[in-house]
Image 1: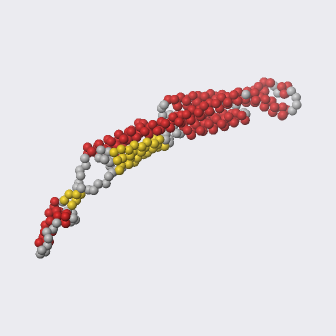
Image 2 (image 1 turned 90 degrees about the vertical axis):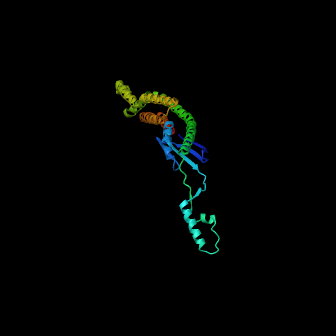
Image 3 (image 1 turned 180 degrees about the vertical axis):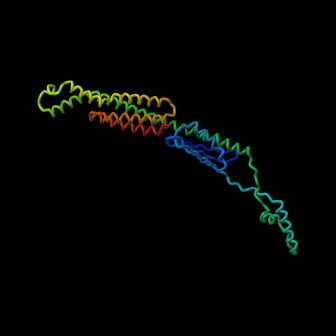
Length: 295
C-alpha cells in the first residue's frame, strides 16, 4: 500500500501548482487532504475519487500553489481627489508667489489613491478548479500505478512464503505419520522400566496396551490440522490470484494459519515435529507481516 506520485503544471492564469500523493500502510482507508485557502470546494470530489480507486492505506494529498505577487492596481478616489485639490489650491492661494501644486504631489496625499477592487471572475475560478481536478486525476493514476508495482513485488514474496509453509506442512505430515509407532515403542519402554524384567504381554493384556496406544494416537493426531493448513494455503493462493482488494481477508486467514500451527505444536509427540511446528509458526508470522502491506 506504499506509493508516491507527483504532478505539476500551470493554471490558465499563469499560476504554477504541484500535486503530491503519498500512501503508507494502514488497516483501513484514511484520507488527508491539504488544500490552499479558497479551494476547499474541491475536497468532496477528491475524496470520492480516492475512495473509488483505493481501499486501504493512509493517504495524504497535498496541493501547493505558487501565486506570483503582483502590485495592486491603484485608482483615485473621486471624492478624496476633489477634496485634496481644493485644499491644495486654497493653501497655495494664501501663499504669495507660491507655485501651483503638481499632480504628483496631490496624488501622494493620504487617501487620494486606493487599490482597485477586482470583482471575482467565477468562470475563471471554475476553470482553475477544473484544471486542478484534472491534474489530481493524473496524479492519482500515478499513485495507483506505484502501489501496483509494489503489489507485484509483494505477490512474489507472499507466494514464496506460501510455498515454504506448504513444504513445512508436508514435512509435518511425514513426521506425524510415524508418531503412533514411536508412541507405542515409548509406552513399551516405560512399562518395561516400571515392571522390570519379564514378558510384558504376559503381565499386561494386549488389549489394554492397544487401548493405551490408541488413546495416545488420538491425542496426538494432527491430520485435521494438516488438512486445514492445506485448505488455508489454497485459499491464500486463490486470493492472490483474484486481483481484488484482499488485504483484510489475507490478514484474517493468517490468524487461522497461526491457530492450526499452535494446535499442531501442542499435539506434537516428537521433538522433530515440534521443531517443524516452530518453523511453521515463524513462516506464518512473516506471512502475517507482509499481508499487512497488501491492499
